[in-house]
Image (cartoon, rainbow, N blue to C red):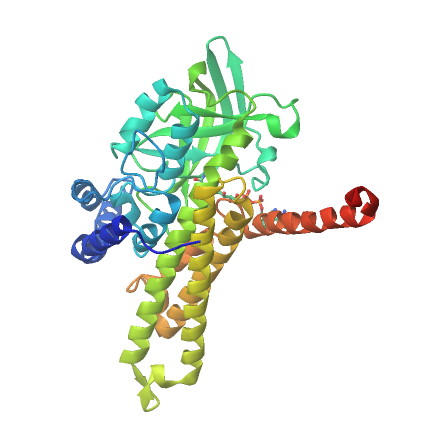
Length: 419
Ligand SMILES: Cc1cc2nc3c(=O)[nH]c(=O)nc-3n(C[C@H](O)[C@H](O)[C@H](O)COP(=O)(O)OP(=O)(O)OC[C@H]3O[C@@H](n4cnc5c(N)ncnc54)[C@H](O)[C@@H]3O)c2cc1C
């Protein structure tokens, strides 16, 4: 495996770093100030002007839709391995990915439409998403059932003539708070009597369809994540044309697996960026403050923590690159162990490193005067979103155990093997 940056990636990396310095870091304060001003005027759910101003600049700089590999509709898309170091840089600032049209859940939704939608649906919904003209949400999780087991999903999608009619209640629908959110991909059951993994389907639903009610925003440790938010959404007799069903009835589980692989690794790439930034802030703070007669950075306990942070970031980055390389070369299905491993490793690592950085900042660390508290809140959710740690660990363990079942079978059949 060769993880050297190609000349193309080196060049894009330089351009991205320059863009971050010129446009992203200097506007961090403005982004949050705009949301605070909107909130003070009674509506936090308005798009920020700063993101809309920066999007054309990112596009002009050739830093647009980099996440989508192998799509004729997005020729600028990179392989997962090429994208990894760039996505990591975007992850240093929570809102940055949107500026480059590389933010969740749009990226996962675009990838789903690219892989599984008809050309008509792609023209209608994928094209404007690729242009950054509106946003999207993915509605799978439900308040009533343990949704980490997707076979529990209760939402009904029932055929009625040329339409499907949808009834259900979803929550944690990220992005559904944004007034620009024009389309949902909804997971529900078309046939509750089919075999367990063939009951679910996915369907494209315009967000202005009658019967949809966005009930309330949820908060993450008190943050509402405006303007995209995480919404509870009720769907009552929501009617959409049958052609909006993706791939076919009963294929929702298959699509979910295909969708979540790339989405997961993108989160992990950004987690590494968030951890790198936390380590940088931690070192600067510890060097700049004196306690008990010497810089805090001179205390050996901080040497231990800084060294630990550096080791764990490097390990997580290498595993992310390995997973990205495998996704590119042998496909998401064969790379499933590596995708599951990095989905456990990266957010846990990032949470621990950010936690150390918060400690290094003293009281300031838990305030919003520094980006650490919000970054911690974001990273902590990734131990749940796209599947909780335990479920990924379970997949890794099953694959590991299966290897040894095979060996036992071989040991039990020495004669057959000898022939
Ligand atoms: C900020 C945020 C954004 C999100 N965005 C979206 C989104 O856009 N769209 C969407 O559909 N969903 C979204 N989610 C939902 C997320 O994917 C679910 O919360 C997650 O899949 C877990 O489902 P659940 O909440 O129903 O937990 P449950 O399924 O009730 O699980 C609760 C806990 O049980 C434990 N558990 C579960 N299975 C096992 C097991 N096999 N072994 C041991 N322990 C286990 C775990 O500790 C788990 O955390 C988001 C969540 C958050 C926090």
